[in-house]
Image (cartoon, rainbow, N blue to C red; front, side, top):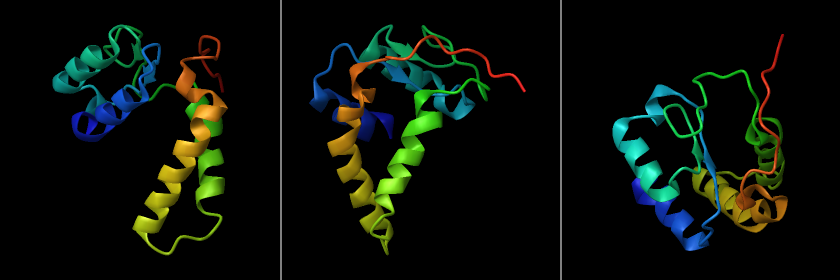
Length: 118
């Protein structure tokens, strides 16, 4: 998936200063995936076993956790899509139009993450 879909889409954006962040779940940190991420982002990615470590099941919140997904969901379900294809089209349209305006495509703009305590 990352090599077939995600990385080609990122290359189209031509944003050399972009950072990539993923959680540290084991399925995201296979050797082949990490090699692809290093090739694409160099030292500009945050992941378990990456240059900037992010532990699996971290209790730290990311901008995606506390803002983006609820914002996307609120917009893509407005017209009550009846099929998966319609939902996918809504997601692609919203992300393409809105996310760059929100600043997520411009690299990290948040301070260093801090642990959440319960």
